[in-house]
Length: 250
Image 1 (cartoon, rainbow, N blue to C red):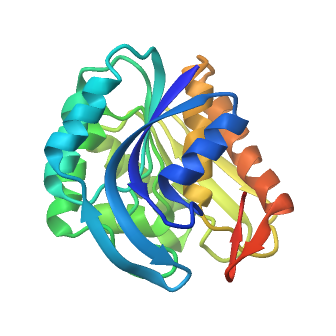
Image 2: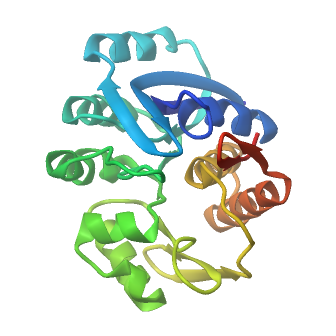
């Protein structure tokens, strides 16, 4: 099974495309990649970022024309033109798309500006089967106070449904208290709550999105895909290792 990961590199492969290749392999999928951006970042944050020229992005998609892709996973994109190009490609695809709209780096710094956020909502989100923002990203994209509890997380999720997403998983791992994620669908809302695990882990959003994409690519129902993806991330907390001041999955 092939899953196409579209996103940005991290020199440490603690997040981004490099992590996706490792995570998807563990999830039983072959990672096909479209490099849309390059970053210089470490535990201190983003030092530099560069969007790959659009012609190169388009040629990477063309190079995959013979691939049987089961699902798409989209990560950090670095300019409006790339967002629009990726949106145009997945709009023609029938396979499920999982999009983690990365706005901030965990070490500090922004991946997206206001124009990019508008393009995400207007052009890309309507073609996404599952959108997986964390609470802060959901709040930024909708103007809601998604950090203030489950009700507010659900409200942010519903606002993103109104923007066209098929379903939204608002992740609450950065909130105080237990680890709570809220899956908002058209007809129902599911709250997932687990005890908070000690420590930190880089790339949790990448891990979850990859696992969810692999499960959806296999034809699993959405809720089961989310449950499996959450369990995958929690298992990585237990086996995380130290790397240059970061806790990483591999």
